[in-house]
Length: 142
Image (cartoon, rainbow, N blue to C red; front, side, top):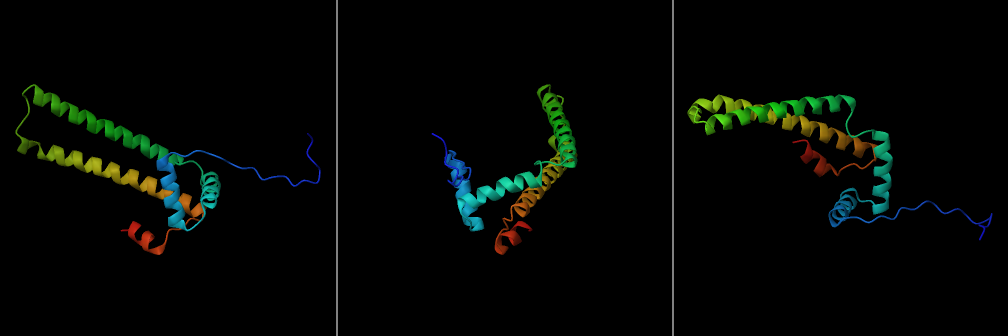
């Protein structure tokens, strides 16, 4: 059956199934931004293209470096555990500088990864024009 030349063309539609968790997240976004579901989805689609990939080339390099540091920490921990199992471990008091150093490295890695992901989330919200209410954005900066 041929379509009439005068009939208006329907806009493309998207019908999708969401997990319960994704539906919950969508409902949270709707409540947070005060927009209908369809508008939240449209804005996120547009913004994801405008904002570009989740990680910039610089952030990708940073993640690669952080992964290397995580592997180094893992090797250090493995060596300590092997020494303990062989009975070669020193007293726990003597290892405090090692544990403190490992903790500092892990904390720095965590801080950098948090900064990368928060920055991208902020960029995506700006591109989507999905600004947070003032009381929430103030809390985020603390």
